[in-house]
Image (cartoon, rainbow, N blue to C red; front, top):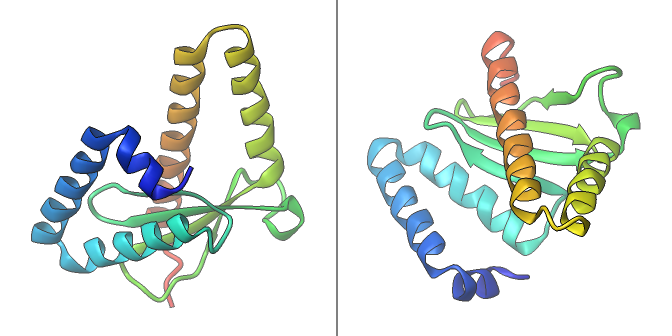
Length: 141
């Protein structure tokens, strides 16, 4: 599904996103621009972008990469950025695939809502963890 299909299928969600971006711009233009750039990159499929979000203070982009390039024993690895409002993190492809298989099995069992909730909570938890890690040890140039 591309962004155009998503807009057609979920017009209220798209309007909500646009409204949220406008409000974010009013509060923090630099953060708004960063989130907009990351969303555009995700929509173009440029990278292995799993998640783009914000907690209102930081733009959080989470990539999925092979575990060999991540810090051993860590669920999330932070990478340096040149922006004071950006957090770039990665999670292993294997972690994502395992969670996806769990959600897929739930869908196969007819538990679609529960699978959606599990996936949404997983994404939210990763974003919260990335922000907490960044606050503890910022990775800015």
